Amino acid sequence: MKIKVPASSANLGPGFDSIGVAISLYLTIEVIGESDHWQVDHNLGDLPSGKDNMIVQAALSVKPDLTPQHLRVESDIPLAHGLGSSSSAIVGGIELADQLGQLNLAPHEKIEIAAQLEGHPDNVAPTILGSLVVGCKVNGHFTAVKAPVPPFAMIAYIPAYNLKTSDARAVLPKQLSFKEAVQASAVANTAVAALFAQDYEKAGELMEADLFHERYRSKLVPELEIIRNVGHEHGAVATYLSGAGPTIMSLVDPQHISDFVDAVREAGLKDEIRRLEVAPRGAFWQK
Ligand SMILES: Nc1ncnc2c1ncn2[C@@H]1O[C@H](COP(=O)(O)OP(=O)(O)O)[C@@H](O)[C@H]1O
Ligand SMILES: N[C@@H](CCOP(=O)(O)O)C(=O)O
Image (cartoon, rainbow, N blue to C red):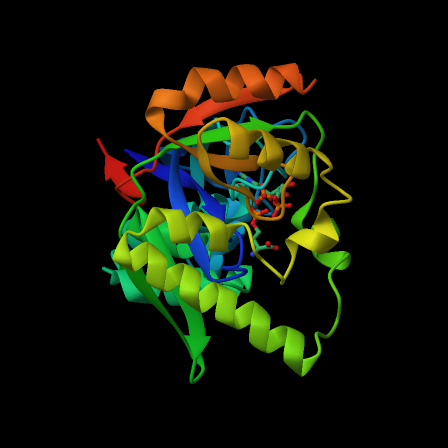
């Protein structure tokens, strides 16, 4: 049995800690069988291979008495690159506990557990539900709503360097003034309204008008402004910092993909560019 868990791209500009979209790169967890200790064989460098692996930790946080398993983990989600690898690991662990422990958790219960572990729902909610999701914490619990998926190609520029989410959060201010907070939230609210109205001209402008995080993080990811400017001339409806970065995501009119990619190259950016798809389905099991 295998669990397949999609990646995710969070924030979409002003939806900081709130909006995310599931992406068609996958973490795969294969259950080989019971063992006398937790064993995680993986292709992910020096990540833990035992009980201290994040997937196992998430599973045990749901069901501490789970029988240890031998797992084989493969992933095409780059680590510490703003594509939600840690959220996919957490969601994978919750799915594992749900299946092995026959817990029959409902999607909203999985979101609650995963968002508590991750601290915010923007990656975990789409990773569980699939497609584009808006969520928040309210009255002490997490809530999430699916939104229409924009009909554009998701073109990711994936810099070679890593950026840990914790490092990219450390550059954010502790406080915003009341005036700034009102303006930042007004931009986010209107962006969400435009996404639901499927008015992508307005949505694109608003997705590029974030005031919560990108202006503080752009010094860590200087490619953001370059690609955003290229996008304005070459068919992108919006370019945003994917999660905490360093991946930069552009929503591009499918007719303009090669023009856009050529222009990014002409701007001197040499790292990986990938066309990704929105994953319509969240984490699932297969035989
Ligand atoms: N499959 C996995 N198994 C165990 N730990 C993982 C896995 N995927 C990610 N992680 C942990 O999450 C960290 C990356 O999380 P983070 O800095 O939030 O970046 P991102 O979620 O954007 O990839 C990795 O360094 C590792 O500690
Ligand atoms: N809202 C978070 C999202 C982090 O996503 P990740 O993919 O970088 O883990 C943030 O912007 O810090």
